[in-house]
Image (cartoon, rainbow, N blue to C red; front, side, top):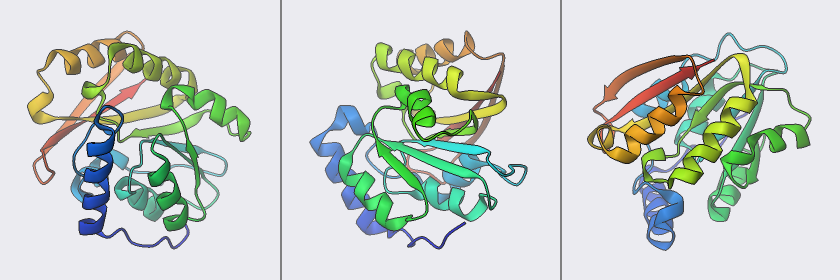
Length: 202
């Protein structure tokens, strides 16, 4: 879907590091995700049809967005929610056929309604939730539950080294009370740092 500009890994890493240094609490990661993590995180999109919606939280410089663009069937819709304005401008230039907004993932239902899109069949998150305060985790979890279609999937990741930490466990507990089904994939060792993919369904 579309022919977006290919990301430039070295330049993107510098951009990402710069944003992390300026606003570490908002960015939460030092390096963009690898293609290997993006492949597993995005998963199979072939079953999506006309009007089905994919939402991406925190697309950053677009490593996961590139995989989505390669796999998203014609007629399906995409919405990217990114909090960093510099990344939003970069993404709009890089993926001109996709819709990107600057804001919080907690407001996902409001954005879907604003653009007259239905509930999301797939929500893909590039946000390292373990780095976020409890109230932000809860807000995004609530927004995700409300915005996800009955047969939809929410996919996120946690770094392997952070998986046992209290903040990571708190996020998983927050999700467990909102979603009936959970699956852990990975770890993806060819990512810096290695990471697990977490899949939630109603």
